[in-house]
Picture (cartoon, chains in turn yellow, red):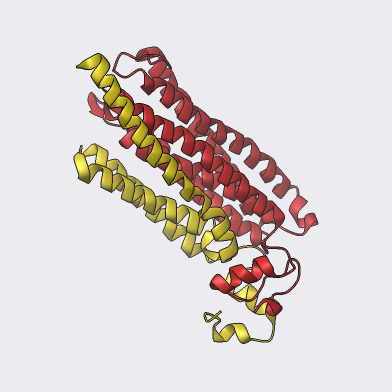
Length: 125
Length: 229
């Protein structure tokens, strides 16, 4: 409630909604934004390829892989898919549910480790 | 603030958390965007769960196997002038898909400017790049199956789970790309024939764009977890 800015007290509702969401019709933004993001995606893809090309290993390897992956995914969702300019209600509805997957990943990691230990104990050792 | 929120379809004024409450509690449409867009987002959300299940099961089998996991950097290596270059084809495929995402973003932009010729051309370029991605994937599968003897149940390089995870994940993604090429071609044809001018809105182009960017998004995760890890 307290984040209502001065521009939002303007008389025309439709007018200011268009201004703050880029909705004259749908999502219209300057081409320059897209070209910039496009270039950045190339740069970060090259970076993540370099991780493999230079055969980095261990912590550095997987932290860089995840970092570049998240940056690229963020740019695609925020700018190309226009999520940045959507209303918070839609952002919440789409972006929060996938967080459940972290629980699945966590459980499956525990389970995978357990299976590994049992197999190792039964067949390898 | 709910009183400020206008009725059905009109964007509500309040921003931030107060806006979420206003959007849901006002007696009105919760998401002030075209319904096709909400439906596409919900479809993509469900698709996110499908791909995540594949990637999570891949993580699970890779963690639980006692056999060594084949090194993807070696498996997907290509020889260029006698030099082995790791993951070369995959890197090219990644760049092709990103290029197609860029052309799609521009197509959406020109669509809203009612530039039919440019929108059609950019969408067809996107479809062509998608088709070339699938072709390169077919080449990759062929090389893996015929030359390297990888099967869903075994392979000469190590853990047998490698094949099943690879074919399932990249196969399902390739299917999405192929479907996207058809989808893009259909919508591009409609743009060209002026269907959306008669309809009065180009939002379908944006919805198509959402699907295509999602295909690129999934590839970002597959590239990181399957090929680079």
